[in-house]
Image (cartoon, rainbow over all chains, first blue to last red; front, side, top):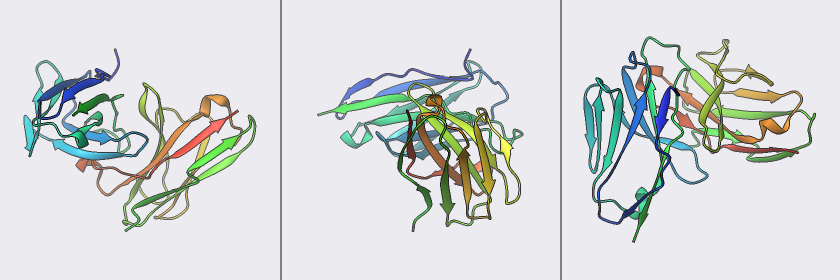
Length: 112
Length: 113
């Protein structure tokens, strides 16, 4: 089993709709979680950090389920500009500095 | 504000040739990283440098070497390029690892023929 698994998508979402997708992780010791967004052929950029059960930032909500070892990202009122690939990154604070294990990403396509 | 700057942005090599990817950051970050990204594979860590003067292997270090030249610069060298090293390479930096925020360069697209 991969350490981090994401549905590659694409999730095709009408503008204004809500979309949610999950990221499962295998290491139960993961304590922090990060969502990055990556636009086509661009560099990843941090979208959201999750240190407890979840986090909300505007239209974006991350929810952590430690028992089932997955974290979800929900996007409400989708905008065309939300079209991107969303990368999940679990991390153990006791782990080595460099060990941010990136998922392969979930592609979201918001259509007019 | 430049952030993380990588050069070159594009490069085509023949098998066996060598090259160095350069990376510089102007945010006074201690930690720097080199990742490669291949379709369907996500970002994989090649090498990282927690602080000036130290480097450590990541997940896929074979075929690469790195140099942390100073606090600002972290270079990645391919001594004898192979087609399997065709990829997009990203340099990143961070101040404190636990915040999770990595600042990435724009990427270097390398093709090895």
